[in-house]
Length: 420
Image 1 (cartoon, rainbow, N blue to C red):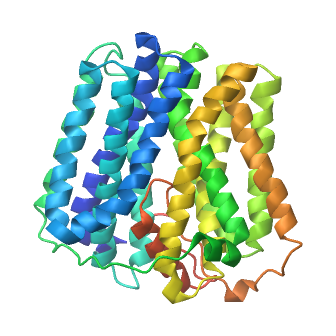
Image 2 (tube, rainbow, N blue to C red):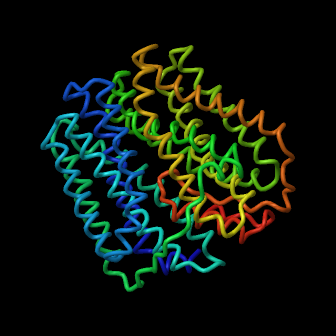
Protein backbone atom coordinates (compact mmCIF):
# COMPACT_ATOMS: atom_id res chain seq x y z
CA UNK A 1 0.00 0.00 0.00
CA UNK A 2 2.90 2.38 0.69
CA UNK A 3 4.03 1.89 -2.92
CA UNK A 4 0.54 2.78 -4.15
CA UNK A 5 0.45 5.93 -2.03
CA UNK A 6 3.93 6.97 -3.17
CA UNK A 7 2.99 6.58 -6.83
CA UNK A 8 -0.54 7.97 -6.69
CA UNK A 9 -0.74 10.39 -3.76
CA UNK A 10 -1.34 13.42 -5.99
CA UNK A 11 -4.18 11.71 -7.82
CA UNK A 12 -5.75 10.37 -4.61
CA UNK A 13 -5.52 13.78 -2.92
CA UNK A 14 -7.09 15.43 -5.93
CA UNK A 15 -9.92 12.88 -6.05
CA UNK A 16 -10.63 13.41 -2.37
CA UNK A 17 -10.92 17.19 -2.86
CA UNK A 18 -13.14 16.63 -5.88
CA UNK A 19 -15.45 14.42 -3.83
CA UNK A 20 -15.63 17.12 -1.16
CA UNK A 21 -16.92 19.50 -3.82
CA UNK A 22 -19.34 16.94 -5.23
CA UNK A 23 -20.56 15.92 -1.78
CA UNK A 24 -21.26 19.49 -0.72
CA UNK A 25 -23.31 20.34 -3.79
CA UNK A 26 -25.59 17.32 -3.37
CA UNK A 27 -26.47 18.18 0.23
CA UNK A 28 -26.41 21.95 -0.15
CA UNK A 29 -28.81 22.05 -3.07
CA UNK A 30 -31.37 20.00 -1.14
CA UNK A 31 -31.26 22.52 1.72
CA UNK A 32 -31.05 25.64 -0.46
CA UNK A 33 -33.87 24.38 -2.68
CA UNK A 34 -36.24 24.40 0.29
CA UNK A 35 -35.11 27.94 1.17
CA UNK A 36 -35.84 29.02 -2.42
CA UNK A 37 -39.30 27.39 -2.25
CA UNK A 38 -38.72 24.61 -4.80
CA UNK A 39 -41.19 21.73 -4.65
CA UNK A 40 -40.18 18.13 -4.03
CA UNK A 41 -40.82 17.32 -7.69
CA UNK A 42 -38.71 20.24 -8.87
CA UNK A 43 -35.85 19.16 -6.61
CA UNK A 44 -36.14 15.59 -7.89
CA UNK A 45 -35.63 16.89 -11.43
CA UNK A 46 -32.56 18.81 -10.26
CA UNK A 47 -31.12 15.71 -8.60
CA UNK A 48 -31.98 13.38 -11.48
CA UNK A 49 -30.29 15.73 -13.96
CA UNK A 50 -26.86 14.95 -12.47
CA UNK A 51 -27.22 11.26 -13.28
CA UNK A 52 -28.47 12.02 -16.79
CA UNK A 53 -25.38 14.13 -17.41
CA UNK A 54 -23.15 11.46 -15.87
CA UNK A 55 -24.58 8.80 -18.17
CA UNK A 56 -24.19 11.03 -21.22
CA UNK A 57 -20.65 11.89 -20.20
CA UNK A 58 -19.69 8.24 -19.77
CA UNK A 59 -20.44 7.80 -23.48
CA UNK A 60 -18.83 10.98 -24.79
CA UNK A 61 -15.84 11.50 -22.46
CA UNK A 62 -13.72 8.64 -23.90
CA UNK A 63 -14.01 10.13 -27.39
CA UNK A 64 -13.07 13.58 -26.08
CA UNK A 65 -9.99 12.09 -24.42
CA UNK A 66 -8.95 10.30 -27.59
CA UNK A 67 -9.22 13.55 -29.58
CA UNK A 68 -7.48 16.11 -27.34
CA UNK A 69 -5.84 14.07 -24.57
CA UNK A 70 -6.30 13.46 -20.87
CA UNK A 71 -4.70 16.65 -19.59
CA UNK A 72 -6.80 19.04 -21.67
CA UNK A 73 -10.05 17.23 -20.93
CA UNK A 74 -9.18 17.08 -17.24
CA UNK A 75 -8.34 20.77 -17.01
CA UNK A 76 -11.33 21.92 -19.07
CA UNK A 77 -13.90 19.87 -17.17
CA UNK A 78 -12.36 20.84 -13.84
CA UNK A 79 -12.64 24.54 -14.67
CA UNK A 80 -16.27 24.08 -15.66
CA UNK A 81 -17.05 22.23 -12.41
CA UNK A 82 -15.51 25.04 -10.38
CA UNK A 83 -17.56 27.66 -12.24
CA UNK A 84 -20.83 25.72 -11.95
CA UNK A 85 -20.49 25.38 -8.18
CA UNK A 86 -20.59 29.17 -7.87
CA UNK A 87 -23.32 29.69 -10.46
CA UNK A 88 -25.90 27.76 -8.44
CA UNK A 89 -26.11 30.68 -6.01
CA UNK A 90 -26.27 33.21 -8.85
CA UNK A 91 -29.24 31.55 -10.60
CA UNK A 92 -31.64 30.14 -7.95
CA UNK A 93 -34.08 28.65 -10.44
CA UNK A 94 -34.85 24.92 -10.56
CA UNK A 95 -34.70 24.75 -14.37
CA UNK A 96 -31.33 26.52 -14.41
CA UNK A 97 -30.14 24.23 -11.64
CA UNK A 98 -31.26 21.18 -13.62
CA UNK A 99 -29.30 22.30 -16.67
CA UNK A 100 -26.25 23.00 -14.51
CA UNK A 101 -26.59 19.59 -12.87
CA UNK A 102 -26.59 17.93 -16.30
CA UNK A 103 -23.32 19.73 -17.05
CA UNK A 104 -22.00 18.84 -13.60
CA UNK A 105 -22.73 15.15 -14.08
CA UNK A 106 -21.14 15.24 -17.52
CA UNK A 107 -18.01 16.92 -16.15
CA UNK A 108 -17.60 14.56 -13.22
CA UNK A 109 -18.04 11.57 -15.50
CA UNK A 110 -15.19 12.80 -17.70
CA UNK A 111 -13.03 13.60 -14.67
CA UNK A 112 -13.60 10.11 -13.25
CA UNK A 113 -12.71 8.47 -16.56
CA UNK A 114 -9.48 10.46 -16.67
CA UNK A 115 -8.53 9.93 -13.02
CA UNK A 116 -9.33 6.22 -13.05
CA UNK A 117 -7.40 5.71 -16.27
CA UNK A 118 -4.39 7.38 -14.64
CA UNK A 119 -4.73 5.25 -11.52
CA UNK A 120 -5.15 2.02 -13.45
CA UNK A 121 -2.20 2.85 -15.67
CA UNK A 122 0.11 3.55 -12.71
CA UNK A 123 -0.79 0.30 -10.92
CA UNK A 124 0.74 -3.12 -11.56
CA UNK A 125 -1.08 -6.43 -11.46
CA UNK A 126 0.17 -6.84 -7.90
CA UNK A 127 -0.95 -3.41 -6.68
CA UNK A 128 -4.14 -2.83 -8.69
CA UNK A 129 -6.41 -4.16 -5.94
CA UNK A 130 -4.71 -1.97 -3.35
CA UNK A 131 -4.94 1.07 -5.62
CA UNK A 132 -8.66 0.53 -6.15
CA UNK A 133 -9.15 0.08 -2.42
CA UNK A 134 -7.33 3.35 -1.71
CA UNK A 135 -9.33 5.09 -4.45
CA UNK A 136 -12.64 3.98 -2.93
CA UNK A 137 -11.53 5.03 0.55
CA UNK A 138 -10.56 8.58 -0.49
CA UNK A 139 -13.85 8.95 -2.38
CA UNK A 140 -15.82 8.06 0.73
CA UNK A 141 -13.64 10.26 2.95
CA UNK A 142 -14.23 13.16 0.56
CA UNK A 143 -18.02 12.81 0.72
CA UNK A 144 -17.99 12.40 4.50
CA UNK A 145 -15.74 15.46 4.90
CA UNK A 146 -18.10 17.44 2.67
CA UNK A 147 -20.90 17.01 5.19
CA UNK A 148 -18.76 18.64 7.87
CA UNK A 149 -18.13 21.57 5.54
CA UNK A 150 -21.90 22.19 5.46
CA UNK A 151 -21.65 23.58 9.00
CA UNK A 152 -19.15 26.37 8.34
CA UNK A 153 -21.56 28.69 6.56
CA UNK A 154 -25.20 29.63 5.97
CA UNK A 155 -27.02 27.63 3.28
CA UNK A 156 -28.88 30.81 2.35
CA UNK A 157 -25.65 32.63 1.59
CA UNK A 158 -22.75 32.26 -0.86
CA UNK A 159 -19.89 30.88 1.22
CA UNK A 160 -20.95 27.24 0.95
CA UNK A 161 -20.98 27.56 -2.84
CA UNK A 162 -17.62 29.31 -2.99
CA UNK A 163 -15.69 26.91 -0.72
CA UNK A 164 -16.28 23.73 -2.78
CA UNK A 165 -15.46 25.71 -5.92
CA UNK A 166 -12.09 26.64 -4.42
CA UNK A 167 -11.44 23.06 -3.27
CA UNK A 168 -12.23 21.68 -6.73
CA UNK A 169 -9.84 24.20 -8.29
CA UNK A 170 -7.14 23.15 -5.83
CA UNK A 171 -7.86 19.47 -6.55
CA UNK A 172 -6.42 19.73 -10.03
CA UNK A 173 -3.16 21.36 -8.96
CA UNK A 174 -1.38 18.24 -7.59
CA UNK A 175 -2.78 16.08 -10.39
CA UNK A 176 -1.76 18.30 -13.30
CA UNK A 177 1.67 19.03 -11.83
CA UNK A 178 2.50 15.40 -11.16
CA UNK A 179 5.22 13.81 -13.24
CA UNK A 180 3.14 10.71 -13.97
CA UNK A 181 2.58 10.36 -17.70
CA UNK A 182 -0.94 10.46 -19.07
CA UNK A 183 -2.19 6.96 -19.91
CA UNK A 184 -3.21 5.72 -23.30
CA UNK A 185 -6.93 5.34 -23.87
CA UNK A 186 -8.11 2.76 -26.33
CA UNK A 187 -11.61 2.09 -27.60
CA UNK A 188 -13.24 -1.18 -26.57
CA UNK A 189 -15.91 -3.30 -28.15
CA UNK A 190 -19.24 -3.00 -26.38
CA UNK A 191 -21.38 -5.88 -25.18
CA UNK A 192 -25.09 -5.82 -25.99
CA UNK A 193 -27.46 -5.50 -23.05
CA UNK A 194 -29.24 -8.66 -24.19
CA UNK A 195 -26.03 -10.65 -24.03
CA UNK A 196 -25.05 -9.07 -20.71
CA UNK A 197 -28.42 -10.03 -19.23
CA UNK A 198 -27.98 -13.57 -20.52
CA UNK A 199 -24.60 -13.76 -18.78
CA UNK A 200 -25.88 -12.46 -15.43
CA UNK A 201 -29.60 -11.69 -14.99
CA UNK A 202 -29.17 -10.98 -11.28
CA UNK A 203 -26.23 -8.68 -11.98
CA UNK A 204 -28.22 -6.60 -14.48
CA UNK A 205 -31.45 -6.39 -12.47
CA UNK A 206 -29.54 -5.77 -9.25
CA UNK A 207 -27.34 -3.03 -10.70
CA UNK A 208 -30.47 -1.29 -12.05
CA UNK A 209 -32.21 -1.42 -8.66
CA UNK A 210 -29.11 -0.35 -6.74
CA UNK A 211 -28.77 2.60 -9.13
CA UNK A 212 -32.20 3.75 -7.97
CA UNK A 213 -31.25 3.26 -4.32
CA UNK A 214 -27.98 5.15 -4.63
CA UNK A 215 -29.50 8.10 -6.49
CA UNK A 216 -32.15 8.42 -3.77
CA UNK A 217 -29.47 8.44 -1.07
CA UNK A 218 -27.04 10.69 -2.94
CA UNK A 219 -29.68 13.02 -4.39
CA UNK A 220 -32.81 13.01 -2.25
CA UNK A 221 -31.59 12.42 1.31
CA UNK A 222 -31.07 16.14 1.92
CA UNK A 223 -34.47 16.91 0.36
CA UNK A 224 -36.16 14.41 2.68
CA UNK A 225 -34.23 15.62 5.72
CA UNK A 226 -35.08 19.28 5.05
CA UNK A 227 -38.78 18.48 4.72
CA UNK A 228 -38.58 16.38 7.89
CA UNK A 229 -37.50 19.49 9.76
CA UNK A 230 -33.93 18.46 10.55
CA UNK A 231 -31.38 21.20 11.15
CA UNK A 232 -28.35 21.60 8.86
CA UNK A 233 -26.00 19.93 11.39
CA UNK A 234 -28.44 17.02 11.68
CA UNK A 235 -28.78 16.73 7.89
CA UNK A 236 -25.03 16.72 7.35
CA UNK A 237 -24.52 14.14 10.12
CA UNK A 238 -27.29 11.90 8.76
CA UNK A 239 -25.77 11.90 5.26
CA UNK A 240 -22.23 11.48 6.58
CA UNK A 241 -23.28 8.40 8.54
CA UNK A 242 -24.68 6.84 5.35
CA UNK A 243 -21.21 6.96 3.80
CA UNK A 244 -19.49 5.88 7.00
CA UNK A 245 -21.65 2.77 6.85
CA UNK A 246 -20.66 2.20 3.24
CA UNK A 247 -16.99 2.52 4.10
CA UNK A 248 -17.07 0.30 7.19
CA UNK A 249 -19.26 -2.54 5.91
CA UNK A 250 -17.57 -2.98 2.52
CA UNK A 251 -14.84 -5.16 3.96
CA UNK A 252 -16.68 -7.63 6.23
CA UNK A 253 -19.25 -8.16 3.49
CA UNK A 254 -16.42 -8.59 0.98
CA UNK A 255 -14.80 -11.17 3.28
CA UNK A 256 -18.05 -13.16 3.38
CA UNK A 257 -18.47 -12.75 -0.38
CA UNK A 258 -15.27 -14.69 -1.03
CA UNK A 259 -16.45 -17.60 1.11
CA UNK A 260 -20.07 -18.31 0.14
CA UNK A 261 -22.60 -18.23 -2.68
CA UNK A 262 -22.75 -14.54 -3.61
CA UNK A 263 -26.42 -14.78 -4.56
CA UNK A 264 -27.31 -15.77 -0.99
CA UNK A 265 -25.25 -12.92 0.39
CA UNK A 266 -26.91 -10.46 -2.01
CA UNK A 267 -30.27 -11.81 -0.82
CA UNK A 268 -29.37 -11.42 2.86
CA UNK A 269 -27.85 -7.95 2.52
CA UNK A 270 -30.80 -6.66 0.46
CA UNK A 271 -33.27 -8.18 2.93
CA UNK A 272 -31.57 -6.44 5.87
CA UNK A 273 -31.83 -3.15 4.00
CA UNK A 274 -35.50 -3.70 3.08
CA UNK A 275 -36.49 -4.53 6.66
CA UNK A 276 -34.53 -1.56 8.00
CA UNK A 277 -36.38 0.82 5.69
CA UNK A 278 -39.75 -0.42 6.95
CA UNK A 279 -39.00 0.87 10.46
CA UNK A 280 -39.11 4.65 9.77
CA UNK A 281 -42.22 4.14 7.62
CA UNK A 282 -44.15 2.37 10.39
CA UNK A 283 -42.73 4.22 13.39
CA UNK A 284 -41.56 7.77 14.04
CA UNK A 285 -38.02 7.18 15.28
CA UNK A 286 -35.99 9.87 17.08
CA UNK A 287 -32.94 11.33 15.39
CA UNK A 288 -30.54 8.99 17.20
CA UNK A 289 -32.37 5.97 15.76
CA UNK A 290 -32.35 7.59 12.32
CA UNK A 291 -28.57 7.70 12.53
CA UNK A 292 -28.47 3.95 13.19
CA UNK A 293 -30.78 3.39 10.21
CA UNK A 294 -28.52 5.60 8.08
CA UNK A 295 -25.50 3.53 9.09
CA UNK A 296 -27.30 0.32 8.10
CA UNK A 297 -28.67 1.51 4.77
CA UNK A 298 -25.29 2.96 3.82
CA UNK A 299 -23.62 -0.26 4.92
CA UNK A 300 -26.04 -2.23 2.75
CA UNK A 301 -26.35 -0.19 -0.44
CA UNK A 302 -22.69 0.53 -1.15
CA UNK A 303 -21.42 -3.07 -0.71
CA UNK A 304 -24.36 -4.35 -2.76
CA UNK A 305 -22.94 -2.52 -5.77
CA UNK A 306 -19.57 -4.25 -5.37
CA UNK A 307 -21.27 -7.59 -4.68
CA UNK A 308 -23.31 -7.43 -7.86
CA UNK A 309 -20.22 -6.53 -9.90
CA UNK A 310 -18.35 -9.47 -8.36
CA UNK A 311 -21.24 -11.81 -9.06
CA UNK A 312 -21.44 -10.68 -12.69
CA UNK A 313 -17.68 -10.99 -13.03
CA UNK A 314 -17.86 -14.67 -12.04
CA UNK A 315 -19.56 -15.43 -15.36
CA UNK A 316 -17.43 -13.25 -17.67
CA UNK A 317 -14.39 -14.06 -19.76
CA UNK A 318 -11.40 -11.71 -19.59
CA UNK A 319 -12.08 -10.38 -23.10
CA UNK A 320 -15.66 -9.39 -22.19
CA UNK A 321 -14.86 -7.24 -19.17
CA UNK A 322 -14.45 -3.92 -20.94
CA UNK A 323 -17.74 -4.28 -22.83
CA UNK A 324 -19.56 -5.51 -19.75
CA UNK A 325 -18.32 -2.59 -17.64
CA UNK A 326 -19.87 -0.11 -20.06
CA UNK A 327 -23.15 -2.02 -20.12
CA UNK A 328 -23.34 -2.23 -16.34
CA UNK A 329 -22.63 1.49 -16.01
CA UNK A 330 -25.44 2.23 -18.48
CA UNK A 331 -27.92 0.03 -16.60
CA UNK A 332 -26.93 1.61 -13.30
CA UNK A 333 -27.27 5.08 -14.83
CA UNK A 334 -30.80 4.44 -16.10
CA UNK A 335 -31.84 3.29 -12.64
CA UNK A 336 -30.18 6.33 -11.09
CA UNK A 337 -31.95 8.78 -13.41
CA UNK A 338 -35.34 7.29 -12.54
CA UNK A 339 -34.65 7.26 -8.79
CA UNK A 340 -35.23 10.88 -7.68
CA UNK A 341 -38.51 11.46 -9.62
CA UNK A 342 -40.00 8.20 -8.34
CA UNK A 343 -38.85 9.07 -4.82
CA UNK A 344 -40.57 12.47 -5.12
CA UNK A 345 -43.74 10.79 -6.42
CA UNK A 346 -43.83 8.38 -3.48
CA UNK A 347 -43.18 11.22 -1.03
CA UNK A 348 -46.17 13.03 -2.51
CA UNK A 349 -48.27 9.86 -2.39
CA UNK A 350 -47.66 8.59 1.14
CA UNK A 351 -45.90 11.50 2.83
CA UNK A 352 -42.31 12.35 3.61
CA UNK A 353 -41.46 8.76 4.56
CA UNK A 354 -42.04 7.76 0.96
CA UNK A 355 -38.27 8.32 0.76
CA UNK A 356 -37.66 5.26 2.94
CA UNK A 357 -40.51 3.32 1.37
CA UNK A 358 -39.03 3.71 -2.11
CA UNK A 359 -35.63 2.41 -1.01
CA UNK A 360 -37.28 -0.44 0.91
CA UNK A 361 -39.37 -1.49 -2.09
CA UNK A 362 -36.32 -1.61 -4.38
CA UNK A 363 -34.33 -3.68 -1.89
CA UNK A 364 -37.36 -5.92 -1.33
CA UNK A 365 -37.63 -6.57 -5.08
CA UNK A 366 -33.90 -7.37 -5.18
CA UNK A 367 -34.35 -9.80 -2.27
CA UNK A 368 -37.15 -11.67 -4.04
CA UNK A 369 -35.37 -11.73 -7.39
CA UNK A 370 -32.11 -12.96 -5.84
CA UNK A 371 -34.04 -15.74 -4.08
CA UNK A 372 -35.61 -16.77 -7.38
CA UNK A 373 -32.27 -16.72 -9.20
CA UNK A 374 -30.80 -19.19 -6.70
CA UNK A 375 -33.27 -21.74 -8.06
CA UNK A 376 -32.37 -21.20 -11.71
CA UNK A 377 -28.76 -22.40 -11.88
CA UNK A 378 -26.10 -23.80 -9.62
CA UNK A 379 -23.65 -21.41 -8.02
CA UNK A 380 -20.05 -21.61 -9.23
CA UNK A 381 -17.64 -23.17 -6.76
CA UNK A 382 -16.01 -20.63 -4.45
CA UNK A 383 -12.61 -21.80 -5.68
CA UNK A 384 -13.60 -20.80 -9.23
CA UNK A 385 -14.83 -17.29 -8.46
CA UNK A 386 -12.84 -14.08 -8.47
CA UNK A 387 -12.08 -12.19 -5.28
CA UNK A 388 -14.33 -9.38 -4.06
CA UNK A 389 -12.96 -5.93 -4.88
CA UNK A 390 -14.37 -2.69 -3.50
CA UNK A 391 -15.76 0.03 -5.73
CA UNK A 392 -17.98 3.01 -4.92
CA UNK A 393 -21.13 3.57 -7.04
CA UNK A 394 -19.74 6.88 -8.34
CA UNK A 395 -17.00 5.64 -10.66
CA UNK A 396 -16.81 5.24 -14.42
CA UNK A 397 -16.59 2.16 -16.60
CA UNK A 398 -12.80 2.37 -16.24
CA UNK A 399 -13.08 1.68 -12.50
CA UNK A 400 -15.57 -1.14 -13.05
CA UNK A 401 -13.32 -2.82 -15.62
CA UNK A 402 -10.27 -2.41 -13.37
CA UNK A 403 -12.18 -3.95 -10.46
CA UNK A 404 -13.15 -6.92 -12.59
CA UNK A 405 -9.58 -7.45 -13.73
CA UNK A 406 -8.24 -7.13 -10.19
CA UNK A 407 -10.82 -9.63 -8.95
CA UNK A 408 -9.82 -12.25 -11.50
CA UNK A 409 -6.12 -11.70 -10.79
CA UNK A 410 -6.72 -12.46 -7.11
CA UNK A 411 -7.93 -15.65 -5.45
CA UNK A 412 -10.73 -16.05 -2.91
CA UNK A 413 -8.21 -17.02 -0.25
CA UNK A 414 -6.35 -13.76 -0.79
CA UNK A 415 -8.99 -11.04 -0.66
CA UNK A 416 -8.29 -7.39 -1.31
CA UNK A 417 -6.71 -5.62 1.68
CA UNK A 418 -9.23 -4.12 4.07
CA UNK A 419 -7.18 -1.14 5.19
CA UNK A 420 -4.42 0.98 3.70
